[in-house]
Image (tube, rainbow, N blue to C red; front, side, top):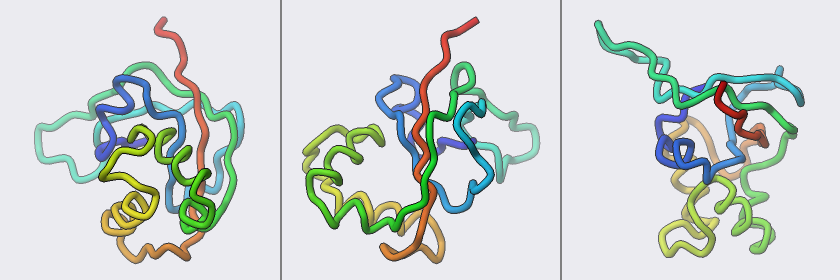
Amino acid sequence: MSFALTTPQVLDQSKDVTRRLGWLHLKAGDLIQPVRKCMGLKPGEKIEKLGPPIRVLSTRREKLSAMTAVQSYGFMEVAREGFGDHDTYFWPSAWVEMFCATHKGCTPDTVITRIEFAYEASK
C-alpha cells in the first residue's frame, strides 16, 4: 500500500488510520506492506518499503464528510491520520479538501474505506 502523501507519518508511526478509495477486500488480520510509492515508478526506480508490514485491525465504509459532520470525530481522525490534533492547517474540513484534491473524482460525499492498522515489530 502506497503512503506517498504520508510517508513521514508512517515512518514516525504517528498514523494508524488511512482512508482509501476502493480497498473493499481488506479484512481484520490482513498484513500489508507499506511503501513510499508503488505506481508511476520511473525506469530504474524501485519500490521502497517503509518498515515491516502493518496489520489491518478494522475496516469500514463511510462518507468522507463524516470527518466534518461531528467536529470531535474529525479532529480525532485527523490526528490518527498523522496530522496532529488541532494543527492550524489540518482542521477536518481542510483535511477533507486535501483528500479530495489528491484523489480524482472524490467529493466529501464519496464513500471511502477507513482502514485502522497497527505497526508490526521488526523481525
